[in-house]
Length: 271
Image (tube, rainbow, N blue to C red):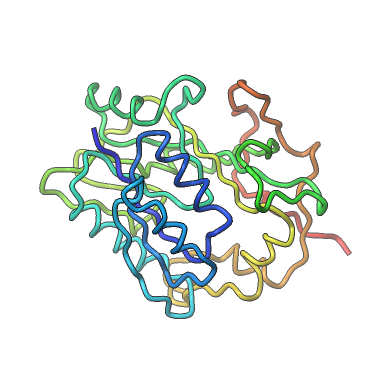
């Protein structure tokens, strides 16, 4: 069984090493697409070449975030790379089995494969700092960040792990990478875990999604992507407080009660 995660990055030095180490520990290899990083991201990836990172692709940066271009490149790579399964992943995500305390991702996928499934959905749990004072930059945020919300706007929204079809294309682009589609797709009867560490501090959030972040205008106009994130640039926000979030206790399962259909990444600050 071979699983390859295809990850597109630009300036993800805060996340990338932790992401790579986790995937390797779960039995997953990495194909990295670097979109013109300037912060040492590419050096981190190169240091893991042949130790988890099996391929590095260059995608020139054009001045804005172009999700459609990235998805189409991932579709091509998934056709070209010899692998049993693929995973569409971002650097700020940690993917795990639903039995994450006892079962590695590769073992869980092998079991689903034996039962005839060829696609996997992930339940998304978004982790956040709970005050301007909390800062997880440079720390093991996976171990230390405990406050989260369960983001569940629709069923099977995150079906982005799939078995390579024989002589059939896959479509990642229509959903912006959220849900792969292909003829004969059979989604597994269990959902895995996606831990999404969307920001590591208040300062990091403003750097990551602030005025310097540009999104492709045609994707906003034609596909209605990035609209919410684009509006964050002109507002002031606060993180949800601890009382507004769930807390992950060591060794305990995630709480899927009271799911939210909208991101509560930041609340608008009332002046």
